Image (spheres, rainbow, N blue to C red):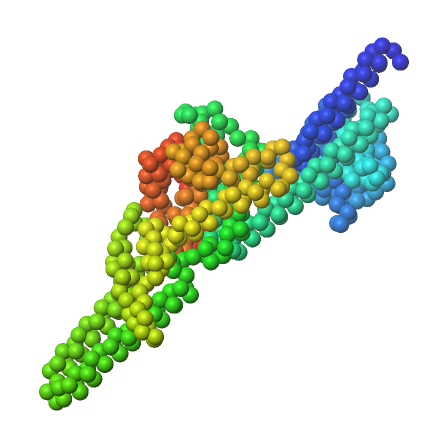
Length: 499
C-alpha cells in the first residue's frame, strides 16, 4: 500500500468513526435515516444512496422518499429487485453495469430520468445477525465500486443497523410513555367528567403560546428559544398539571353547590318540619281560642288563619333564599347577612326543645362569597398541585424532561406571591409555569358549562386575564402575546361542537 492509499484508508476510517458518532447521537428515526443517507453518500463517494427497512409482518421493504415538501413511503416485496434480493439472501451485491444485470428494474430510471450505471447494495444486520434493512449506493463518482468499497459499506451498514434499532426502540419507548400520559389524563378526567378535555386544551394553548413567544422579535422574551425537547417537556407538564386531583376527595372535586346534596336534603326536611310546627302552633292557638270564646271566636280565628298564612309564606321565602344562596357566587365579600338572620330563627322539635333553622356549619357554607367551596375544601382542592408534584417526582424523567414536576408544581403561583402552594414571586416562577397559568385560567373560564359555573365568551375571558395582569397575578407580556397572536383560538376546535 503506497502512502497515498494509506492516507485514503485513514481518511475513510476517520470518516467511519465520525459517521458512527453522528448516528449514535440521533434518536429521531426520520432524521436518522436522512443522516445515514447523506453520510453514506459522502463517505462512499457515490452520486446517491437509498435505505430500506424490513417489515417482517408484511414481508416487504419500505423506505421514505422526499416528494416536494412531503415524505412519501414506498414499498417493495422482499425478493424483488436488487434490494429485495439482498434482504432475502443477506449477501452483498456489487454490480458494475446495472443494465447488464437482470435483477435491475430499468423502469425506475425511465420514470425518473435518472441513469443508473453501477450499484453497491449491502445488508444491514443487527447484533443477532438478522437482516433489518438494506443500504444501497448508486453511481460511484470515479469508476466502479471496489472490494474495499464493499467492506466500507458493510461497516457503515452495521453502524446504521445499530443506530436504526436504537431509534426504533426509542420511538417505541416514546409511544409507550405517550400511552402512559394519555392513561393518566384519562384517570384525571374520569374523576370529574365535567372537566373532560381540559388538560389537552391547556397543553395545546401552552405549546401555542410558547411558539409565539419563540417568534417574538421585541420585548422581554426576545432572547427566549424553546427547543423541540423543551416543547415536549412543556407539553407533558401541561397534560399532567392536574394529575394530583386523583388525591382529592370526589365529593369536593365535583361539588356543584355550597351544600352537598345530602346536606341540602336535610335542610329541606327541616323546613318541612318547621312549616308543620308552625301549622301545629296555630292549630293549638285556634283550638284554645275556640274553647274559650265559643261561637264568638270566628273573627279572631280568621285573623289567626291570616297570620299563619303569612308565617308559612315567610318560611317558604326563607327557604327559597337558601336555595338561591346555595348556588355558587362570585361576590367580593359578605352579601349573605340574611342567612344569619334565618339561622337565628328557632322552632320546637318533637321533644319540645328549640332548634335553629340553620346550624352554624350550614350557615357558614351558604355564606361562601366565591364559588361553592369553603376554606377547608378549597385548601383540599389546592392540594392537588402538591399531589401532582409528588407523583411526577416518582417518574425517572430523562435529562431533557427533568423539569416537568417543577413546571406543573408552579402553575397556580402568582407574580405577587399570593398564589399557591409556595407563594412564589415573579423571578422564582418558571417561565413555562407562567405561560401555563394563563392558559389554565383562560380554559377554565371558557370551558363548556360546568355544574358550578357557566362558560364565558372568549372576549370576557380575555378581559379577565387583563384584570389579572392589573392585579399583579399574571405576566403582562405573556398575556399580550396570548391575546394579540390569537393563541386563545387554538383550543376552539378541541371544544365540544368546535366552539
